[in-house]
Amino acid sequence: MPRVRKGAATRQARKRVMKEARGYRGAAGRNYRLAKEARINALVNARIGRKQKKRQYRGLWIIRLNAACRQRDIRYSQFIDGLKKAGIALNRKMLSEIAIADESGFDALVEKAKAAQQ
Image 1 (cartoon, rainbow, N blue to C red):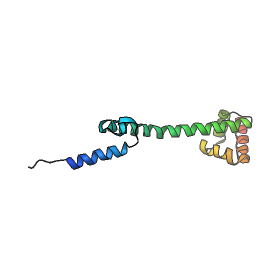
Image 2 (cartoon, helix red, strand yellow):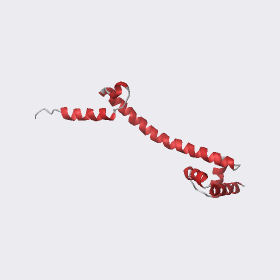
Image 3 (cartoon, rainbow, N blue to C red):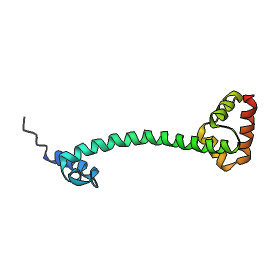
Image 4 (cartoon, rainbow, N blue to C red):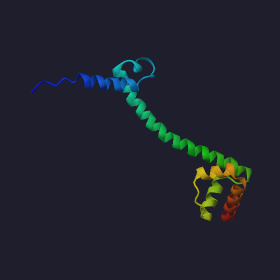
């Protein structure tokens, strides 16, 4: 069998890695070996970042809800507990949108939560 030469395939693979590493600082953007490692780390960090984004948004919604609840003389934890006891199943994102866009609707939710806690 003839010897297989992989020059073109190797060159294409390296070009692909270097293209993805374009914009990296220092030798990681120019040196193939460092670019390969930096690309792997970038992909790992991108996945971690996608998970953290969800966490951070949930925290933001909770902060907004707490502020809206405090204006209505109830703590966030009491509000969530009251909603659960009242059987109202809304997620924090929707509750925070209601608190911002529809204050009268949020007031009604707060009253139901307070009533359910009694």
